[in-house]
Length: 353
Image 1 (cartoon, rainbow, N blue to C red):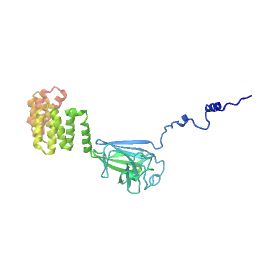
Image 2: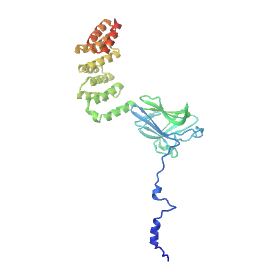
Image 3: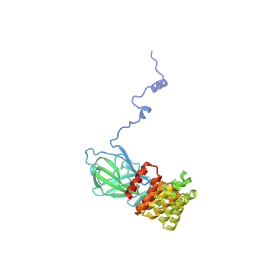
Image 4: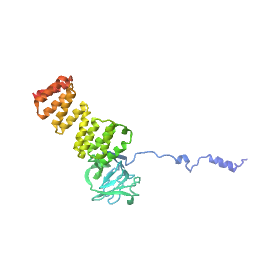
């Protein structure tokens, strides 16, 4: 006789039998395979001064299809790529169409048209395509005039006409190029970056403050603050370098007397090489007589330096005084033991004689 299985035992036994109709928890968590995308991901970055401009997008292909007005409809918001919305990112504030756009990530959308296009930067940068686009989230809209371009089977973005303060980001697909002009106030960005860097470890070294002041002097910007940087460097260690930077800043401000005093102080602590290099700076400015004064100073201070005489000879050659040029080149030749320099000076002397 077959005895019936108790109901509780039957339930327990059945629990041990895999279900044929319901997926197990493990099966429900099977991860999808990562496979190639029909429109592969791409990104491009361009640095303008210190500002990084990046565009991340997916690259659809033409695949024999008509693009403009068909695959990409006119007069409708388009993701400017494929799949997720295209993203443009700025590491510092920039200007688009005369308006300041703060650093950050923006969704990049476009409205293609038969004439001028509309380019949109949206404060929402994480949308799927343009399907949830909302004009209330616009950061800016600018117009762009499409241009004829080289054939591109796959959509691409390029950075063109790069300067230290501007760049043109260009969408290229099929035979069309759509430019977006981007301007950067590089001087303001660099000054802000310098201020931040001067809060770090470099603040304990005279060279850091001098470098900061030197950048401002070379770019004729932020002069008053940079003079403070130069003075701080000088207090830590007065050198030809930081004193000459201060002289340049004072000259940029129009204080020629102060600049001359700073230069005199710089030359008083300068090495032979620093005096020599500054002499060539003056020659480059056309101040040959002032350069000769400095080269004479080096000759008097370093009478055994062939290079001091060599530089003075070059200055006299530039001035057109062949006799004094020959005299000083001859002394340089007598002092140098370097065969390369001897051969060069001999050639110069042959030309002068």
